[in-house]
Length: 79
Image 1 (cartoon, helix red, strand yellow):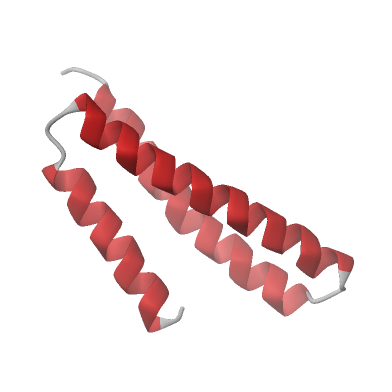
Image 2: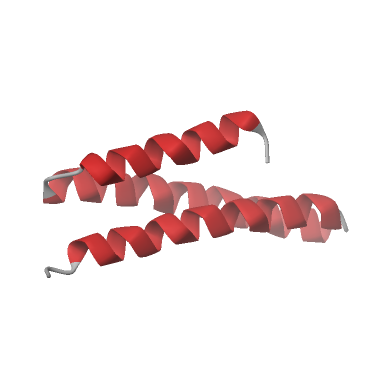
């Protein structure tokens, strides 16, 4: 993974950990959804171009965002 991507993931995770309001959670969720959409489009393009290495890289990044989506869901569930 490239350094910039990992920094972005860390920043989103930090924002999520600090999020106290529904609005903050929705903002993070919106960012994650936009990134997932972008990555999905990139994966589709990579497969269309038979660039399996690029597709693999995009799918790996998508997994990071999927993990953040799970954290968001868990944080929304009141204990």
